[in-house]
Amino acid sequence: MVRIGTYHRVDVTDAAASLLRQLTEQHGPLMFHQSGGCCDGSAPMCYPIGMFMTGPSDVKLGDLDVPGLEPIEVFMSESQFEYWKYTHLTIDVVPGRGAGFSVEGPTGMRFLIRSRMLNDAELEYFGLTTAS
Image (cartoon, rainbow, N blue to C red; front, side, top):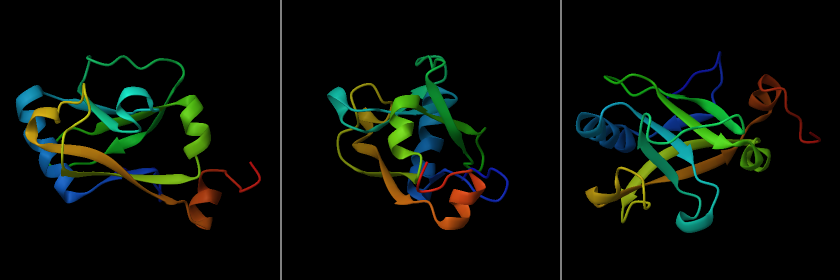
């Protein structure tokens, strides 16, 4: 789980953390980019570091803290972040076919995002108000 001071924007379930440990053994260090739609909908895409290049229009949401692994960076496009900036995201995993280019594809599992609205304390911490 990522901690930015007291609050964080992104988290990971125990089940997803377990799969990330397995995938890291197989592929090396990993990162996520929250897809903005198109072919795979809005799936969190997991890549070996260096296989997906982030750019100046990507926002780093934070790092997943998975015990036993280096922090796993999580990004989203700036335009999509404008829609999701009031949201806390949790990366989870469920049975199913993984997104096209995401490394979990062959495992029979797929990553997904569970979301909730930021609470008042988190909104204040991140400098957001509902009028922003």
